Every structure is written in C-alpha cells, then in structure tokens.
Length: 387
Image 1 (tube, one colour):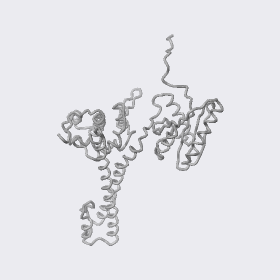
Image 2 (tube, rainbow, N blue to C red):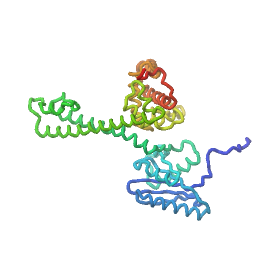
Image 3 (cartoon, rainbow, N blue to C red):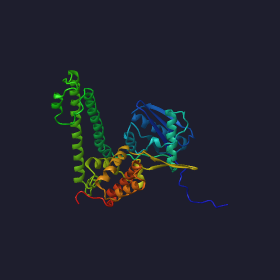
Image 4 (cartoon, one colour):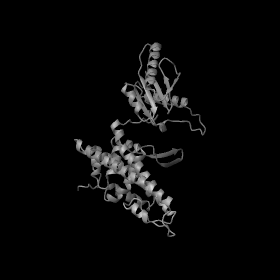
C-alpha cells in the first residue's frame, strides 16, 4: 500500500467565514447565507433593491449570531453575478472591508435537463455553493470577473457610445433610402453635405415632385440624422482628447500610443483595444485569447473529436474589433510574419477556410499586440508609421 502524502492539499476545507450570495433584481434582493455553527442550513432573507443600509444591518446580525453560537468573530465573503447592477454594489462592499466577488453567470454549472427548476432561491443556493467551492480552491468551478477601476470603466464609455451612435446612423440612412426607393429614387445619399438641397429637387420615378407628407417625414429623418452626426463628432473629439492627454501625461508610452505607431491601426481601433482589453493585466497568452473569446472549443468524448469553433465567451467588442483588424492587417502589413502565415495556411487549404483562418489570425494578432504593448516586443515584419 502506498504511503499517504503528508503534503497539504491545495483544496482548503477549513474555511472560517460567513458566506453570502446576493441574487439581485430591479425590485428585490434575495440574500442567501451560510454561517459557521449552523450546520449545512442556508438562511434566506429578502429586502428592497438598493437598500444598502439594510444589507449591512443584516451582515451585522449574521456576525452576532455566529459569535453567539461559536464564540468567534468571522469575516463575510460575498458573491454576486455580473449583470444589470454593474459593479457599484461590489465597490460598496469592498469599501466596508467585505470580501466581494463578481462571477460570470454563464460559467456556473447548471443542470442539463430540458426542463429544470429555476427560481431566485435555487439560484442563490447555487451561487453560495459556487463561492464555497471557489474558496476551497477547486479548479474550473467558475470564472470570476475582474472588476475595472472606475476610471477604466468610464473610459470605455466613449467607444461604446460611438458604436451605438453609428448603429443609429445606419438605421436612419437606411430608412431614408428605403422611403425614397419606394418612390423610384435610388441615387440619393443622405450623408452628403448637400442632402437638403438635393432633397428639394428630387422627383419620383413617374416624374412627380415628392408628396408633401413624404417630404416632411424625410426632413424629420434628416433632422435626427444631423443630430447623430453632431453627437458622433463630439464623441470622436472627446476620444481624441483622451488619447492626447494619455500620451502627454504618461512617463512611459501608453498602450494606445504604441498601437497608433503601427501601420494600419487607426484611432478608433487603438482606442477600442486600449479601453476594452489591453488595459488589463494578463498572466499569459491564453488569458489574452480567452478574454476576447477567441480560444478554440474542442469536443472530445470517446471516438468523437472535433472542434466547435471559438468560445465567444469573452468581450464581444474586443473580438469584433480583432476580426476586423485581422482583415486590415493583411492589407496594410502584407510582409509581416502573421500575414505570411495566413497566406501560406490558405494556400495549403486550396483557398478554402478563410473565415476560420482569419479568426486564428485575429487570435495570434491580439497576443502579438499584447506582447508589443506590455513587453515592447515588435511584431515580426511589422512596419511602423514613422519608418
């Protein structure tokens, strides 16, 4: 019989704390707790959403009950799902020296039955069990979110707002074109500066002037479009000012400044990469790819072994930007090692599988950019704008 190892296990079983899960909704907060001295019985409490003082009063009550049962004082460890409430509750808890965790809800294991019970009480208990397993050190239990600093969270508002405004602009342009096309007019461009002058001279396909109500509707659409154009310009000016301030204030080059030195990387791409991904600390390249949702997802069981594609579990804005940048990288950096790798891979496949190969290139490019902005490792064969 083999001798039992005397080395301590990496999974802790002596967790002395009061574990609390917060199931949050717009109207009600459901708090599930498990305290030392209460066996395996979970207690549940309900309160109005946003009642922070009531939450801290409950925590004090839980501490007093545990002290009365065990004669010891225990810290509180809390968990909540990343969702509509953002990170303000997490920051409030940390300000009061309470250990708080924010978990990615999609990473928590659930029943695979087609019909499974789901209530706030069940979800609260599942959160609590997940927190305890995480604190014991069990691997692959869940994925805890890294909470950004308030200034980091605020900085990425700019690129996200611009994206939303661009989507609205496209919708208004398409609506204007659609209305005109129904009258036989197909050559009108709403984004041109002379859009109002050209609208006054338009005639329908059968030679009539635009009907009065149709023209009034188009004028209102143009009013909204012009407002969007002003807002997009204001957001872009704010973005450029933020980048300029970061470049002038930093003693060492900021990631956004280093990215702008690369040929083919413009202001918007650099701002998105900076605000959505490269401001974070990563330990290795796998974490970088996983954060963008660009890691492969194998399916292996018995004789079955195939690839399901990328996980798409990370930041969707960063992933979309990297796919777009990968295509532009081939155009602006054709002599780089990454572009040559892509071309050779496509050539070996007979010109097929370009879509899956571009995703692989996006993953490699993101890792290369991460190494470039953190360690100064120049991407092999890449051309800088000032060269």
